[in-house]
Amino acid sequence: MNVLTGGYLPEFGRSTGGAVEAVTKSGSNEFRGSVFGNFAPGALATRGTEVRQETGTISGRESLWNLGDIGAELGGPLIRDKLWFYVGIAPSFTRYQIERNLNVRVPDENGEPQVDEDDFTRTQPIEGTQQHFFAEQRSLQYIGKLTYHVSTNHTVALSVVGTPFSSGGPGRFSLLPDNGAPEITVIVGAPEALSTLRGRNGLDLGLKTSSSFFNKHLLLDATLGWHLRAAPCVPRMARGRAANISRRMRCTTGTRYSSSHAAPLDAGPGSTGSIPAWPSHTS
Image (tube, rainbow, N blue to C red):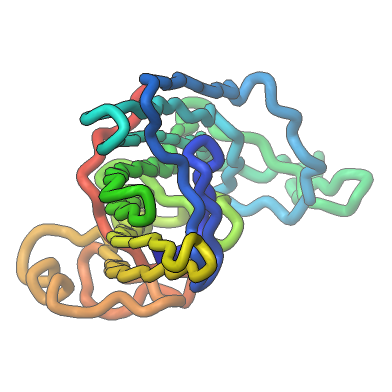
């Protein structure tokens, strides 16, 4: 099967990254399967070196909340020595917490702003103004494969592979596709006006035949593939006329839209993606 999407399905034996032929597992005359999972709480993650900058009235900080994946695979015979199946599924998730603080400058005895040893203005959070938000991404990888042994010299395999993911959404920020970091750290403005729903829906169907002729002196493999990649971008929009207008607009990379206007809010990073149906991760 010709695969055009990037990604990796280690448990299912699929490697992608261009127009290459995927190598996937197949069923056999014995039922075999496995279950796997990984979970990493943010409390066990080491924070990187923080790059200090001048703190304004609004400051923010991001930290990993959790990440993980689970999966299962199963293969076996539908008709022994004739027809085999193989299926696998692997959802995964990543979540960051974003802390938002309102700050006030610390004055000296003359009422002038104090500076610290690194020449940064001293500030302190205003009590009761701290807020927490989340940025998260959810993805799903799945595969299904049927292998039919027509005869000793002829085999046919039908496979389907999908890799949808979504990031952000109502009440959540998304992760940037290039580095996996939250799309925003310092929340200046209404959060619902700055968040974006990103995603992608990749689907590949493949039909492959393998035949041999002249006592296996001549081998013939033929592959027919169909690839779908849906990648719209949906900014968060307020209700009303602006929202109706925005739904008819195409999101362009590098542009983010405000919730109350159909015009660009800033030139911050944007993305493209589809929106697969996937429940929110609430752990």
